[in-house]
Image (cartoon, rainbow over all chains, first blue to last red; front, side, top):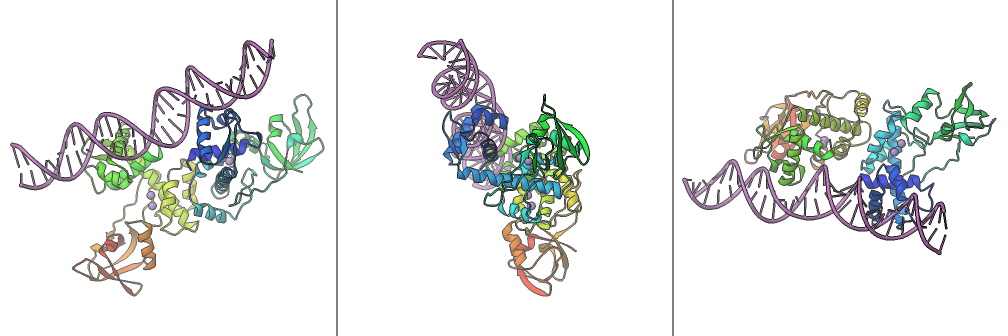
Length: 216
Length: 216
DNA sequence: AAATAAGTTTAGGCAAACCTAAAAAATATA
DNA sequence: TATATTTTTTAGGTTTGCCTAAACTTATTT
Ligand SMILES: [Mn+2]
Ligand SMILES: [Mn+2]
Ligand SMILES: [Mn+2]
Ligand SMILES: [Mn+2]
């Protein structure tokens, strides 16, 4: 399994939730910052290796094998992110890029020991669940802040956008995992929201409210 | 800097101590488990990049640039080995192969934080010095056990061969860093040695005594 | 010094993972 | 339904890092 193959499987895993009938080469190429022609080639290889279901012009989906491989890479990614944030002095906006490299290290013992060293964490620093060795993922029902109505209150349990810039924005507004968010007002014309956090009121754009997850 | 380029520089660094006039393509190829023709190609590339001194048919040596890059990779390798042995439950014969992968991760912050997390170690679990950020290496004068004469005593400070099989052999004989070794007898015909460690006497082959370093 | 042996480089190929441009298929629109 | 647009695949290249076989250079023998 090459780095590139692992990245393709991981990307298909993420994208197939929104494209249950098949992830298109264009979407995959965008996500991977490459070109549709390159994607077609790789997908055919993964299909021959028995990791994906591919039908020309119909997109691609992971099969059981491919999903397990993807989940193992995601497990490694999230364990490494946890390591960087908990044991080394990384903030949550700095961990993703390094974890993108570390997730490809091959050593069963390493990932087992890392898991133990971290105290068998269930979630990474962005609030995402860490799959277990068998590829089981805890499914938490969560809502986007944008789906709440004025008066409702939720606890921040995750983010959708994990880019540095968004995470740094959240840091500036002092929004972190576990923060309690109350919807004060929904601005009708642009769907922006006034919310209360720690007694402070602040205004969040629609883009922002769609990228913050809460549980009720 | 690709993984492959880093491995070449690291290999040249190790080999040029024994070949100060130039490391031959054959020697390098053997060390890297590849072929002389492949080595010639890569060396030419490294020469064009200004990392080595290469004269056709005369072998290759690192220049200042190349040596610094090599030392940074070695620094990462030894810090990761220390991490695996000290923080995770790896024994000294299990760490090298994983460190061969981890040494290629690119992140200045990561290596800085890892160093701090480990308490700024000066030596790795095999007794090898860890270069500092500027590429300075502590030079310790050490001798092979084979160079001692009967009656002399030394403290084990390192090994030459870091293969699993040799390290496991040392574990079996309870020879570890810090162990005090006294030469009891030198067998003339095969240069094997009877040594005393922890009050026990045992026989070491010449291969073994040449691969254990002690300081007096 | 000439012949032989050993070591090194060059030439030509291959696989992985990209790319652009052209051809083909699917989808949308008139 | 026929035509235009968009999406996808195919064809043909490129780069990196490897390989084998042949040519060449250097070192060692006789
Ligand atoms: Mn991440
Ligand atoms: Mn990631
Ligand atoms: Mn090592
Ligand atoms: Mn190493």
